[in-house]
Image (tube, rainbow, N blue to C red; front, side):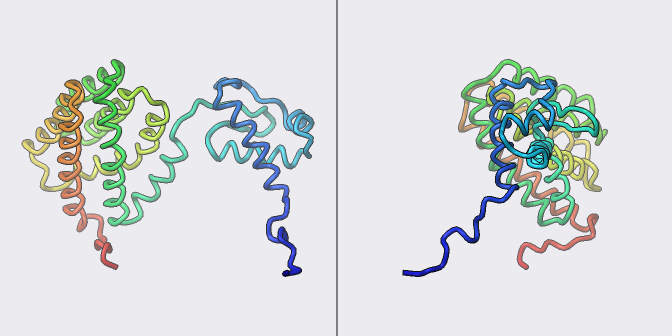
Length: 251
């Protein structure tokens, strides 16, 4: 039998203890026992209640801040935040601007994620989400040939689709995808080949998605989403020269 100690590589470091403290506080935040906007106890009180040192309590709060669950400011108590997708949004924002390959992968990821979201929306048809989609398509018609306003309406439509599911985690995921949505929609809207008919066709694709969701047609919704993202993928190829990058998908 080997004499090598089993646990030599996994010692109980302060960081691991900080993770445990962060996990316990996160549970209270996600359960709503610490409400958004509510102050957390001081580092000293957290350390005392968990039986750890102040540096460990401080590291736990840093972990929670990095995850977007709390906000911290020097000299002030940490404060609980409402759940949102901002950490994901920042990450995806960096990734999608790094290369054309990442852009196309992001578009593919959105299609996979939103196909499921759209089908669930067609099952549940939450009133708030349906109203958001309706308002967004109306705003798209008003924003034809205005890339900035059109992009914001596009983002609002896809969030409305998530809202129609009634699933808060999916809504948070969609918030996390905003950077990708803005990048793809912005590039799509400002490419040289964009015509008035093309602008209108984009709105009509969104309206088809909306109509199939309202009708509760899950299979029709899937087909509408796939058609929508097929068009976006074609557009990503058209902007390759403008981005000054080669498609390195075969590298």
